[in-house]
Length: 253
Image 1: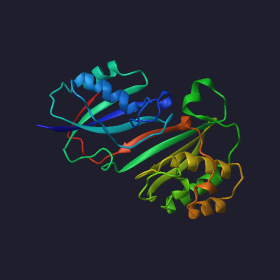
Image 2 (image 1 turned 120 degrees about the vertical axis):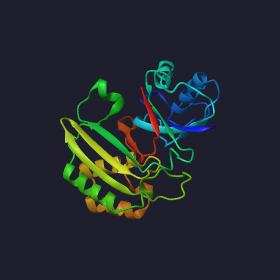
Image 3 (image 1 turned 180 degrees about the horizontal axis):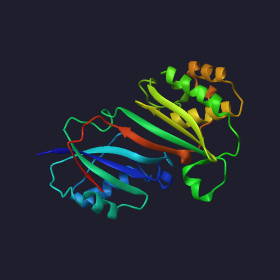
Image 4 (image 1 turned 30 degrees about the vertical axis):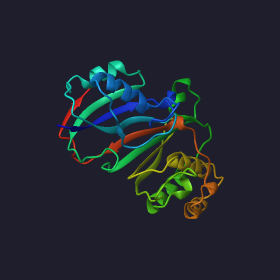
């Protein structure tokens, strides 16, 4: 009998060309599938909860797979982690019903972007070094505008095959912790390059290059060319993918 499982995993995306398998490039999906196939003894195809671009990290990502093969779920995480490189970790495996879907059943995704004002070689892979002082109040006023809008074409990567630019952002906030500006954002879905474009445009607000009113006009324009620069991938981490009570049984690392 075929069963469906969700795997929960995390990764440092620095050495990969994104999560989604693609020809002639090393990706997270490829590495997990190949090692998983060796463990279970047959090819495995993962259906990802979403995609992250080259250099982006994930503290929590999910994917589902179907199999009729029997395997020891109690040792799954430990055994697969011993086979995977150090920058990818399987956190749990979860039995679900056969109609649950890693991508379509996700209620929300949350991302975090970190800007460091202090040059630190140890944080280089996980933050964007920018020594400027930023106006946190104005940037958080822009966050309120994000929550009140739902069309984010202006922040979407150009020339992508997207059916809709509608996203429902439920949370967006900047905070200052020591020498870091930290941006957290939650939405039901995200467009490609959306968070990095939002952060780049908000940096322009924080530097007083554009006003809060300008930021809203960019939102209304639906024009990527009017928005700010796309910040480096290194500072971006997928923090959480949220589901509602779909795990029937779970085995953790």
